[in-house]
Length: 255
Image (cartoon, rainbow, N blue to C red):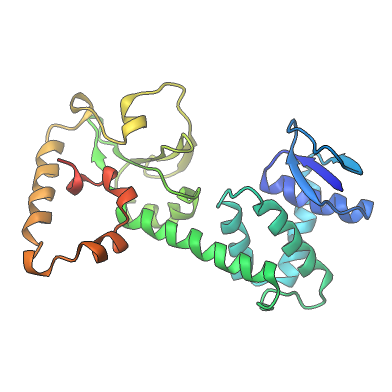
């Protein structure tokens, strides 16, 4: 068994692809540097992330793959699933080795899995776009927090800038403890050292809210109740279209 150790970044994975072809040794297992090695292995190779190497691999893939396939790869990476790096490594190698690429060869299990996984990530992105609820803070910034299954906030940034480009906002991923701040011109990735309650619950305390925020929240709840037609309620369909795991972050679902 050949083991490659790397930093678990996408550029690091591209570097692993370069090093594997250079050494003519291909990994059976990919681990993060510092993780324990398996009991039995043939060779352990440490692959140090190198921008020049990763760029060469990416440019090679751009020649073989459509923009859709490249986007699918990055979406799969953001799934953060345990063995997604080996899946993408095999997918990249198959496309590099094939004269015309294999992105449409859905009889290949890796190609099919990349398509299926990227679709799941895309669906989660749409849910973030649908269910993100903002609260106006006292300084005028709009704060929205969620805990998506996959690391999809980066995929929703273009939508958020286009839809809410006229206001300052901060979107935060509670699970991954980071977010993005938009200051009307630039989107900046942000991290917080403290553990303020709104970074844990997703909701601002009363003293942090703008004066009229509670009023608008109450109006939104009343509107949500008013448009609900009792005779047409379908709880099963409602949960299907609005998964329960998002309810705790929805203003209209809070009591």
